[in-house]
Image 1 (cartoon, rainbow, N blue to C red):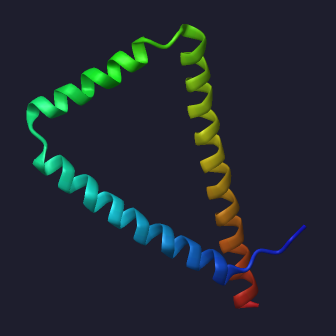
Image 2: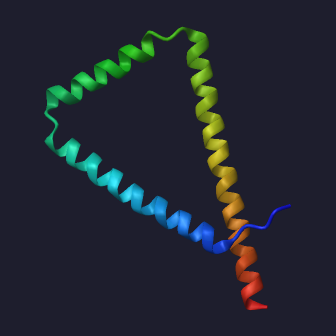
Length: 92
């Protein structure tokens, strides 16, 4: 099994954190300037697109959501094990 480089992981996570801050700032700015009618229109469009899907596609999307959640949880557990392993090696 290949060993992960902790520095590379830290840099990647820091990059994700910065990107997330930018995305959230843009989202907040967009929401702050959105009118009630624009918000309702977006909601109607999302609902209409969901309703237009056949039942089998909705089930597929629900499975995809579950798969994504399971993948994120598995990644979190892997990072936790890596962090615990790094801590164990540093204290030894």
